[in-house]
Length: 274
Image 1 (cartoon, rainbow, N blue to C red):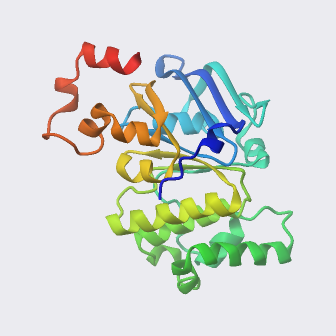
Image 2: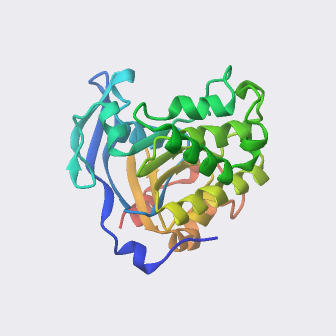
């Protein structure tokens, strides 16, 4: 299931973050010099505990910080070689950036079919609309079975599939997923992540995956970044991260159950940063 390969590492990045900082209310520094790359057609995970800065990083990329009184105060964000730091969210969507926000936000009073149509660009032809819906239903047959039911009555897993399907209707070039496994049964997590990997493989869609579930994420991505307290403290291939003793201990369930903040010390932090 792991998509790691040497050719992907050689691809030019579709997304580059260069030492970005994010301020809230011009006071609170939430992101402290984060740099990362997503290869064109690649899959990358941004891992970390709750509150580490993962969602804020995605919002900086999609332009959703302003609604939360946040801003990128330093650094550069490039998409396909273009600096987009000052672009409004709608322009970033037009470039091909799609952000699936945490929480499976769908129109609950509409059917899955109506949800997909509502997400389609106004300029999309009826023929393209029909073919895009058919393509999405082929990836998510559960949605095809429930396409006439109100979305509010779908299960959590089905709503997550619908949220991803709505994103695909915009025909993105970069799909950013914020905690897609949150609150889902393990078998559904495996199913959804398998589908994400299949879409990446068949469509060449670049994916930036934010996850606390490092086990699931590292099975489908080629590279990962570990963020703590607004800083990237580790970056490597998925295979290397899975083999790292610190990652195993704190993120993959290895070793005895411990309190991460109590036992983390300077020597370990120094080793991660070197």
